[in-house]
Length: 485
Image 1 (cartoon, rainbow, N blue to C red):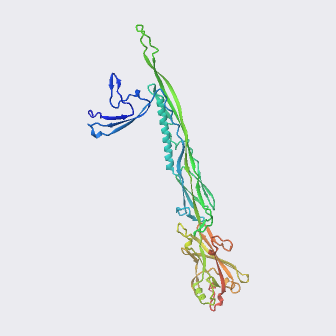
Image 2 (cartoon, rainbow, N blue to C red):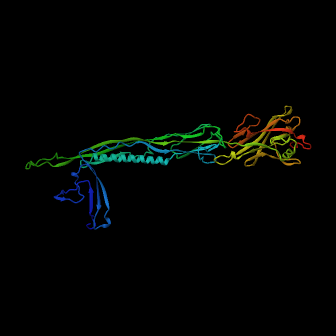
Image 3 (tube, rainbow, N blue to C red):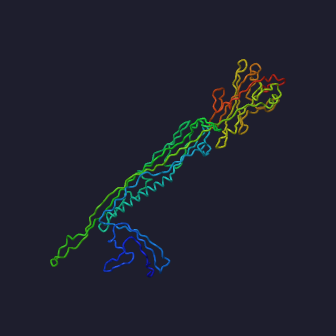
């Protein structure tokens, strides 16, 4: 190069590279000189690559330039129509949690009967914001294209002082007063329980509602079907309407060379041409960019189960009576054969099959009882109600009481009258103990006191224990009915 001011460069293009008069009688054929007057309108690419042997560090460097040649006698092509149309705003996500904030992991997972379920809906606001930004970018591009169009429509030197302005100067679709969001969107919960509807704010990212309609169980914990319909949570799609309108205004001066109207010809030189002056006339143009977008956010749907809590009731003999019966004369007696007057112990047990199949937890028992309501000899009404209390996390028993001469003994569901020889249980007759269990969330299973037909629960055998009276305790010589002590 010359003093570092230039570099020898190889220029390549589809443009013709021919010598031409640059003016003042100087003709040039330097590489890279192009005479626009000889080039047809169009878009051309010119590429220059450094080949200067005196600047090896730059050899191979290149520059590419795009040149647009226009024909001023022809109007520019009209711009593209204003952008608009459908845009994807993402999809909502529904999650269901139990009352301990445990996320249900599948559609087979569920909550306990009457347990409130927290339903969380996520609307991807970041996705929506990205769409708004893209819409603003599209509108900005359309404004730039419209400006370029008017610049070509009113080019120099025929037009001067060309001013192209937009109102508003830029478009912010998210905050525009014309952008219309739905006021709310519905969240529906349906199923065999109580249907509920909640309203969601489409402008919030995450929002939760508590659903308390889980009144009808669909499965037992051992996967027996109670109701074939699942609980379904659903949201419908919603659309954000994004109309826009940008006014374009153009002002300019249309200028041309005319003969000076005030010129007076010189009599001595009548052939002289009048001098030229520039005459400019103001003008204006208007246009509008207007269209609409629709951002659609897809809905979501999921489902969950409601598990029925259950327990098992059963009877036991006291240790003393188990020893007596092992030696008595009724060799064919069964486990649920009792003497009238014998203490009848009752239990409520949670078995492994009662565990929730997903949380791994037992249902929580808050109360339990056993009761008897029978008619004894001489039409005597025999009734009792025994509240039970927790003995272990999975077992409920009767309370302990002090019995004279015997010490602490567990209370049974029997009463002294039931062992009475004249009015109590009759030898050879069958009776039953009924159970009622209160679970968390105010769920009752078993038989309400004195209501033998009001079973609530999956299996009657879990909440009713029949027993047979094989004899009266007074038959045993030297044995007294300790329940009367």
